[in-house]
Length: 373
Image (cartoon, rainbow, N blue to C red; front, side, top):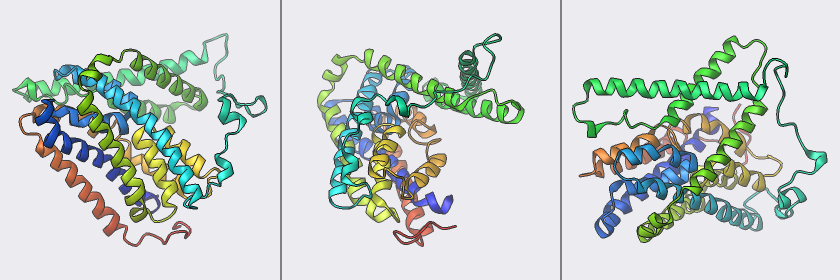
């Protein structure tokens, strides 16, 4: 798995860290001086693009705690632009790649089918949403699954309170608080891991159904996006329109540059299929990346889907709504008088992952060759 997905992980990390580098770079060098915006403005690209609506909404308490409530609405707007750009530009790149024979996806696969065109699955192709694991006479199965999710969130909330309590013991300046303002959602993810391990160990009857959990996941994301957009304050966007549009253009340009230039040089085989999946994820959500990959490689004949999936195991806990994404906003507030050290951290991370790709994985298998055993 490491040999197979290592180059993919290095590429994905560079795409993600690059969003911080270009966002913070242009913000600190130009936008702060010209428009008088706070340094936290530079985090809008990765929070909205790589993180998505879930991360933007999850960081709302952090933006409020650090005295920049406008950041909530700008982050949600960034996430919306990221999703639109990911699908529209991604599909344009897939069509271009099909014409240039960069992709194994044939041109006729890009034509809309009945399912893709209407969004409704034909009756003959419909699948089960999940299985009822409890008798209806005893308890509602869906309620149990919602309760399990609530337990995971409660564990995350307990971790948040514990970390904040520990920090108060040794922290003398409340303005330098990181753990106290740490968002709940990555800790709830840890709570989910704990719950999963407990059920793996003690649930002999397999009462949790994967299909129902996926439905709850999709429903929660839909509700979150609708609620986030419904609470978006347009006047905040208008008041910061010029620097916001500049930042969005720079962020999109970086992601396109990675697909057009970096991917050919960093990914050992099926560079377009691999990179278009990363493009979808780094501008929208993981589902967008998988959508673009399925269009570019409809029969999953390449190594892209496996490499992308394996890479997520190490990528997601830190980037795209992970630990670093949750930490960077408090750090930018703490170092608001001189935030350049945060920018240098991103440059250092890019250098590390370039070393990983071109030194540790310099002997990656040749393009088109079968993956290593």
